[in-house]
Amino acid sequence: MVHARPEHRSGAGRRAGRAINVPLTIARRGLLWPWRPLRATRQLTALLHWGTTLAGGLVSAAVRDPDRPALVDERGVLTYAELHDRTDRLAAALIPDRGGRRRRVGVLCRNHRGLVEALVACSKCGAEVVLLNTGLGAGQLNAVMRELWADIIVADAEFADLLPLGGRPITKVTGWGSGPQGRDHLRGVGPTLDELIERTPAPVLEPPSTQGRIVFLSSGTSGRPKGARRPPRPGFVPLAAMLERTPLRVGDRMLIEAPLFHAWGYSSFQLALAMRATVVIGRRFDPELTLRTIQERSCTTLFTVPIMLQRILALPRSVREAYDTSSLRVIAVSGSRLPGDLATAVMDAYPVELVNVYGSTEAGWVTIATAGELRAHPDTAGRPVTGAVVAILDEHGDPVPAGGTGRIFAANGMHFEGYTGGVPMETRDGMLFLGDVGHFDQDGLLYIDGRADEMIVSGGENVFPGAAEDVISRLPQVREVAVTSVPDPEYGERLAAYIVTAPGERLDADTVRGHVRGELARFAVPRDVHFRSHLPRNAMGKVVPHQLREAAAP
Image: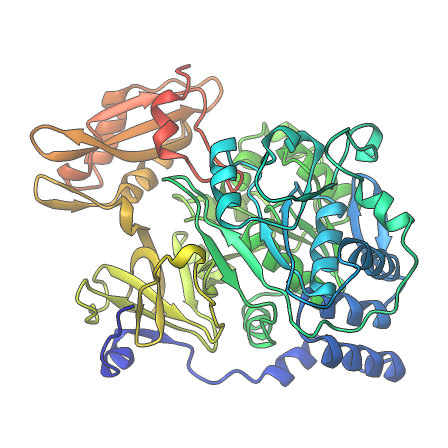
């Protein structure tokens, strides 16, 4: 762990200009508005009793608005009261003896009610949850489980062949089974969550003496995933900081397309509980299905990642315009850097307020770009949220002047508990290195230039693939693009571009190189240009670099 001198912090980056008034912000948005004094009192009492955990969010919402729809998935609707009752029963069924050591539960599920119920039930009984990425291969999953062996694993039936064999005994539970609407379990996988809930009497639960924790996994695009432990009680400051910069409302109907096993999807769900929202989820992303769901469920908010927005815009205009999406007010996007002019294209296609949320699994959200900022600067990550500090530092920990590129460090008051397996984390003056490289402009807006481990040195020049990606993505013939490095005998490394063209479009390598040469320095021009039928991506939509060469040519 590395510490910078304290004086670096004041000049290293940008802060929100004042301390956040949490009670005022929450009151203005109606989270605790006492228009029903008795219910508001019960809500506040439950929240104080359970804390700002997933369990606390659900219990407080259930006593305030028991009949409000809480969750909608392929199997229908659950009210807050129903979800509260089901997760009470599931908590008692999963861990009937709540004394002794803290149990660990692995969860390998797509977005559906079983995943939600497992998460809330574990919060109610104080278990530590390891959220397993559904895109992991068998080798990666087994490596994770060797390090983070669980007492219980809740998995969808489709992942039965990936579950670890041998080793310590493990209780297996089916999150989404076979048969109609995933109700049936497969032999050897274990009982379904429904079966556990139905056969368990309703208990009277009290908050656990030891709060559970959440372990998120890194994407594993460049190797073995690492676990990041997050505290179970984020407090009110991150919630208030989000509400100050976004137009979210109590009771919104929120479609969460981002995977809940990822920090962005999980945080979106936690935010939705605090807002007493109706959460709409589906097991698999399909761009046309997203539009249909917005129409049928009158969704007001969409939580998503950039590649999903790209795929919605890639639909034929006739398909996009066939759905009534007028209910949609807000699109919140995070998870990876916004490519090219995607922000402008989304807001041109849909009259919504698009917000770009930047942060990390370890630090939560640290900057947010509003719709107005994205109109003027489509590639910005925005300004630090109130209560956060973001710094651009060089390799020695010294501050980089505005406009200069450096490593991004941030702190927002959320206590990150560290990586599993003893993986070290780099800090400077209490700020955590987020793994990205970027810069501030003269107006205090942050820009992400790329991942620190993506920067290459080609012929003595520092090159970030993201700059070439942005330029290439603006070509009308391009549907998707990824730029990465390949070895070069003369320059050490060089850039290679992998392009998926839009349906019916033609493009050649010379046109691509000429377009980049017209906007960037010569050393940022990809020498290799490959055309592919698709780009290999993980469940969060991030390109998996080592699989690019294996992607099929058109």
